[in-house]
Length: 221
Image (cartoon, rainbow, N blue to C red):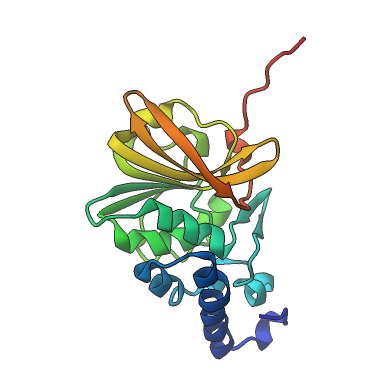
């Protein structure tokens, strides 16, 4: 969708933009899960961004949320959820809920969804629509009181995943997230193995970097 003043974009324009996102961004890039395409073809992504960004809500790029945060691109979020393979019985945890778009997609697919979002400015503007139980907590802490989870999704790139996240996954639990190494972001999946999480990067992909998961600085000589 070409950039246009927010007040000139009609509901029909947004519907066409959603269809174009499905047909020109997602399907050609390997997003094939019917439930996900249906959800993203219905959810009004424009309602989850600032008013001056509504006309570009469906473009294949991250969108700023302010205070150093950004909303991942439609393809990055779609790939996260496709790799997550959410199941009806899953107890799920979403880290970095932002303004709620990913929660709106994931919530109906799982038994329960907890969402961690420390920025009340974002979560307060979120059209939750009952999608998930929202918690104002630090991203890097997760939500130990709600553990164990079958699925954890982190909407952004993590440089260092705290070891405590292994304690928040149930046996054979899985995690899907972005990672960042020397400035290169990738999508990655992991499974709990014993007391640790074995993480496997899959492919380079643009994700906003979450500063809360920066690797601790160390001295070098």
